[in-house]
Amino acid sequence: MAKLKNLDQPAKVKNYSDFQNEKGATSLLIARIASYVFLAFVTIMCLFSFYLLIINSTRSNAGLQQGFSLLPREYFLQNFASAMASSTYYMPRGLLNSLIVAASTSIVTVYFSAMTAYGLFAYDFKGRKLADKFILLVMMIPTQVSTVGFVTYVRQLRLVDTYWPLIIPAIAAPATYFYMKQYIEGALPLEVVEAARVDGSNEFRTFNTICLPMLKPALAVQMIFAFVASWNNFFTPALILDKAEYYTTPIMISLLKSELTSQAGDLGKVYMSIFVSIVPVIIVYIFLSKFIIKGVTLGSVKG
Amino acid sequence: MGKKHKSISYAKWGYLFILPFFVVYAVCTLVPLFSTFFYSFFEYRTTQSLDVIGPNFIGLENYIEMFSPDSTGTIYVFQYTFNTLLMWLMGAIPQILFALVLALIFTGIRLRIKGQAFFKTVIYMPNLIMASAFAMLFCTLFSNVGPVNQLYQMFTGATAPFEFLRDVWSTRTIIAFINFLMWFGNTTILLMAGIMGIDQSLFEASSIDGATSKQTFFKITLPLLAPIIIYVVITALIGGLQMFDVPQIMIKGSGGLVEEGCQTLVMQLNRYIGVTNNYGEAGTLSVYIFVVTAILSVIVFKVTNPGSGKKKAKKGGK
Image (cartoon, rainbow over all chains, first blue to last red; front, side, top):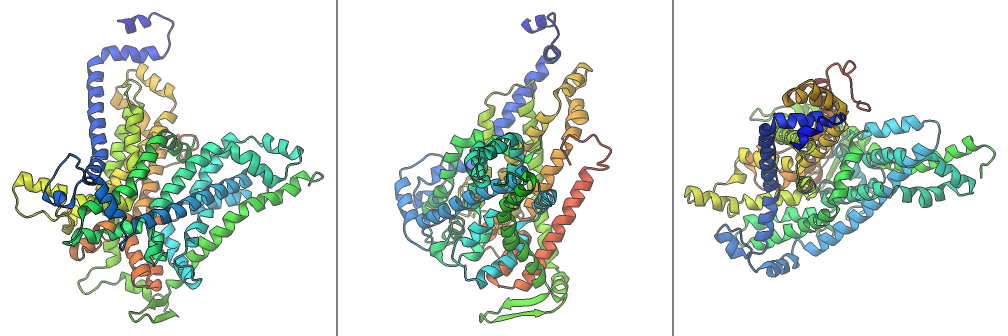
């Protein structure tokens, strides 16, 4: 009733849809219920496998072989100990290796992408438009297409079993550049750069001490994405890391398969190994999710 | 410095700032890209006794080899293309449909859904999970001693487990499902941004004119969302053609029919480079993937955007 009254007041466009609300109140209610049911279904679909993962990482191998259960047991620490024990896949080492690679990669990606975007934004020079077009064009090329040449070079230069071939190429990240360029255009007034110039600041210093801090939100979002992408990368590391001590987490995970098929395999250990490679990311994500979701929209869709 | 000739002296800084990107891109991607294409005309491989053969120029022989059928009449590169596209489609169709429905639910002003932040957090989460760990998790859940089989045996009374990972279609479905689960949240967020970018007055006008919500969707939302849907489909397609982590983990060691039915293009590339060290044929396959990606992107763009000039495109959309 209160809503109908609104109609008499000076017209706001919103009132028309409110009026429709009254007309189709039942159909709206049905739509709302259907929406919640659908959302509940999607939520369960997303979370159920992780729920099973967490539950199963607390159960013993014998219990896991025996039957299905949705209730946790007390073998968490025992599984943790066996997953972390030295073997063909030494999880702590893998996690540390992944951390090293992902941390360096994400820093390099973000810094140099911002630098490139800044260079193309703040300066007018010959070939500027062309450079921008070029990066957008190569963004479409699948990375795997150049892998053959890349791997042969890495082998010829004896860079196998080092992390350089994973970190250095991250300097040129077209997608991150694209994001940074769009952000800079909206967030960095050229007057700031000019003011710094008047104050006698060197161009490079202006970028590092004045512009970078202004780009913090974009840097943080892209850093998270670059970190996750590197942390999850399986294709290239699997081709250039030969020795087990250099393996990153995804390669270690791929070795778990043998544990599944062999009779002596320990399922508790398998679940726990997956647990340690997934759950830390989930926990970090829960804290940063708002930020991340905002970041997805900012970068990928124009205005 | 450079106080006298501002516009000239600052240009060099521009070059300097973009230099690292272009040098690294040239060295790490462009040159390898050309040598990949170059190797595709060469015999260049390591034999089982670890002797390196080549590189010897053999012209188009690798290409002829790639497109010729084996003894059973299968042209493997087409089989792998088919597998890749099939599993991509099986995941991408529900991915885009779910995303569209979810985006409409989240942006529906009249629906006023509560707890949006929670639902968005949940649906985006699988995107950040390590694909290989995700695949391994599903491998474990669907293994012969996994919970899915335990439930299957409990409900059907079957004494033997159903070997999900030894069946081509169940393996394909699981792979497609993982891809769907990993990407529909991302697509939802992108479509939402697209819908929210549409001029609200259009919805209000249509509501005043008495349009049903179905009419509003098909006559306003969908056409104006087209540029973003194209963007989503093209990026999903390029990602789909690179499908590797999930099927690689799922079918590792499965062999036989499952391998033939689920092997993707990039998995085959990985095998050439990493297992058989056959750089020549790997190069040929790379060229093939490159060309297929380009062709499919153009097709998707043409099909989803007929007469792109005429339509009132959203500002900034291609």
